[in-house]
Image (cartoon, rainbow, N blue to C red; front, side, top):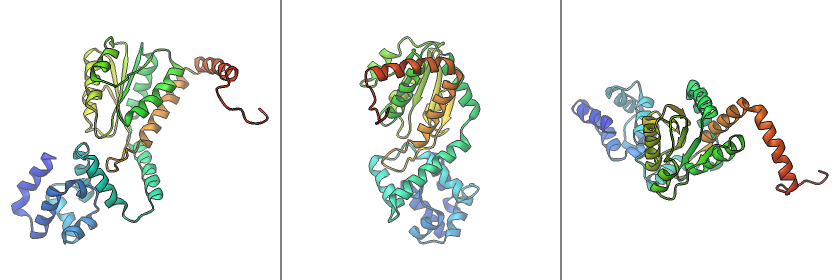
Length: 287
């Protein structure tokens, strides 16, 4: 954010009157400007779309989309819940909410597939499969992802520790003995959890392999990760979109499972017997 504002300040004397209006709006309302098209930003401040595009070029960007992406990335962890709600209202307008939200989630999965580091994914699968112990941590909305991953990994392995997060001290008590033969998986999306970052740093310092599941290369989780899995999320909505991260977790579970196929088949045969004997699932008529 500071870099962008410095660029604006340095170029201010060179700007036209219209470009100064854009600069002032971005400085004062960066949370809204980050999600406006060039056309909408121009209409909001009273200049043409071409003036907005020239403004981005004057700042040294390839075009307005590059400036917009930079602004979105840099404010990713700055939006409060109230700002997210305001941005959501601006973006939705009178559009069909169901159509808009589901279409956006589809786009996030597509972007994730295009941008994810496949080598990092395969290294993560190998590290998880070979680990002495697997620690998984996700805080707040990311706890749903951690629980999902922990549930399925616990069916595959007998060495999974889903880290509980009631207090900071409790986290460190659970990962106290983590070492170089272990894997720590940290999951966090904007607004990033300090507890997750602290646990990742500790695990890294103890020599464990650290895997991050997050939304961007600019995420603070990347500082402590050996392998980074990027899954796009919606930072604007007051509700976190976790569709793409969940899809990446599904892929991780399947890939790890395929590497231990015979072992898993035996586990599920035993589980089916237990589920049947103790009537865990409702049986349909005729079964």
